[in-house]
Structure formats: C-alpha cells, structure tokens
Length: 267
Image (tube, rainbow, N blue to C red; front, side, top):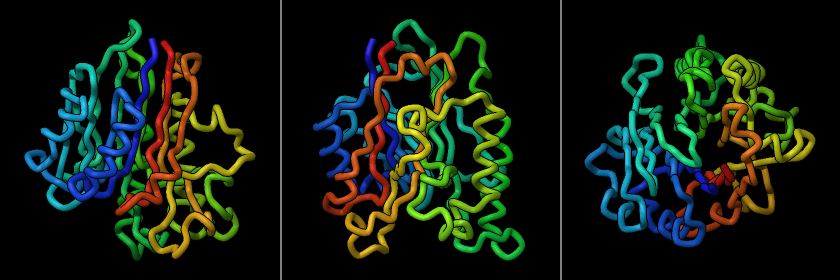
C-alpha cells in the first residue's frame, strides 16, 4: 500500500496558507507535518486544512513562536507532546497511524535553531539546542513493541559534509559545528534510526532543503543546507520508494526558507 508524507517548516502557517494550498493541490501527500506554525492551537487554519482533504489534524501550537502540527487523510491516535528541556516550548508531537498492516509512530520535531554564536557560555540559545539534542538521544526507533517509527522535522542541523554548501566555511557556523553534527549523529545511532534521505542520495553528493532569506539570489548562489530530515525504523527501509525535495517552492511568492520534503513508501 502506497503512502506519502511531507515535512515542511512553513514559517507561519497562517501567513503561508496560499503556498500550502498550492503544494497540497499539486502533490497530494497523505500526511503533512508542519513546523514553526507560529500560532496557538485555536488559531490554526483547521477549516482550510480540512477542505484540502485533511480531516485528521493534531496541533501543538504556541503564541508567536515555534509550534508543530500533523494533518492526515487517515486517522491519527495516541498523540503525545514531549516538553524537551522543560521550558514549555511546542517543539514535538507524535501520533500513531496505521498503513499497510503496520502500526507506525510518527514524530514531528522542531529543534531549536541555536542563535548565532556557537558557545553555550555566552549564548544560552546554543546551550538550549545542545541540551535538546542530549534529550533526543533517548528516543529509540524501536521504543514500542510491534510499532514501526518515522521521525521528521526541521532539526536545524546539517550533519554531513555535503549537507552544506561549504564544509570548511561552515565549521564554526551554528547548524554545522562539530558538537552539533556529532550530537545529531549520536541521536541517529543510539536510537537505531535510518537516515532515509541519505539512503537514496550518497553522502558524496550535495543535498539541501534550506536556503537563507539573506541571499539576494538564493537559487544562483545555491548556498544551501540540509536542515530538514526524514528518518525511520530499519523495518521501513525496504518500503522506501523515493524522496522529493521541492526546491522550486523556495521561489514561490512569500515562501518559507525551507522547501517541502516528501517521502514515498510502498508497504
């Protein structure tokens, strides 16, 4: 049984509903995971999302900042929201759905960006990011018996050398510093996760999902980073068909700086 799932840091769902609608009408993913929705639960555009064909919606919002949501064409159950670092931010939500005879736990994350200075002693935001990563290391892909797992989201770290436009120039830039990349690698290894994007695109090839708003001509400059991720438990790897990064969406009117990333499975 085929199904598709999209992860997208939308950078304000209410502001960018026109491009959400454009994307959904063209590509029709079965599940849409959004990050940085920047609204409270009651402000989420439920009616608009339902009209687009997503009657099952779980939202974990926050006033003005952060926030994650999952919209689905089929039922979602057992939703759970973990307060990483205990600061009250809405950065994680997980649900159960069933497809192809499998019970699947889906995690949607928005990891802290970490500010500009990669030193926790002078930048509390960076310390928060490292602490968040440390807590994520306890998250196992096989945590629930008889349940597969998928983890998606804006993890705000480009872990491999070719996940950024210049490994050497970004070694001291937040999102690609060694302490962050090693931390995320440990999250994957300790949790038994499979990095599905790199299963299909060799580590020797460049792979980006984000292009800065600061670039005058982001497309020509192509100084991207892979900040958005899709992982799974090992048992889902054989069902992986393809992953699409819709780079062109970065150039749509009033875009997010992240492109939507869609994974296709055939269970």
